[in-house]
Length: 353
Image (cartoon, rainbow, N blue to C red; front, side):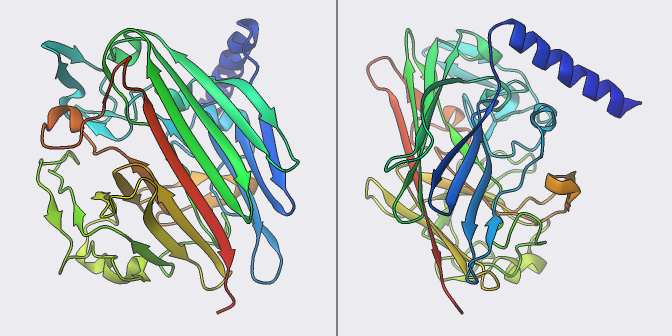
């Protein structure tokens, strides 16, 4: 009965959006045997197809078969999350002397912009080129003053583009139109280089170019400290298996790494799946990256495959979590004079181990 009710709610919501002039669709950008599908519901990446070491094409991101399932999604599969990604402690912050109270959707905290954050709204497709030398799609979203409790009008955009060879560029921009506001957008794809239905990622090798983390309290809110990873399970400065230190952890990884490099487009992480031969290298302009290993995930996904804990790696480049409540963290405040810019560059390759 609950499934039927949820399905009816999905169709009702989709009907309302259609009536309001919003068209929800699926858009493919393609370059040879490399393709990415996106939906403007949440500006989400819903599939990334590329070959393995044997030339077999596989989908390397977790997701669903239908848009209706994304409407009910609670895991942010492939979404652009915001207005502020990650957590804000106590669902509140003070900016320019004004206290702003947000909508709590993670205990007493706000996560990924609130219950109707940017991953659960319909974006406008403003530019789209499916193939050719420069396949790309740009989606925009107009966020109103007070939306989910955040101040000011914000115009956000994301451009997904394919480059040679096997490169996916993600550029997120935002402009505050009338007043200062926090902005921290993140791309929340769940990656499994062996294929979305290949099982856990514990044997993947990962390297993260960061020698520190921001430790968390019992509610997953940063304490404000910045601690070294040396002699801890969080040390990925040299490549090692994702699951190699799991016995020393309570429940996998869900932690923010301040990146070491001061380059504008800085090395972030490299993930290798030896079975498929696929390698993913990530660079970003953001100051940090969140490593999340899908610790509590149990979802029926594409083709009816049931995703289990540790079946994907999320590498969410971002500003520091809860930066609005920690003056020692890099600021995430955007003003009309200082717009937001955030680029990610994924480079895929094949290695025959």
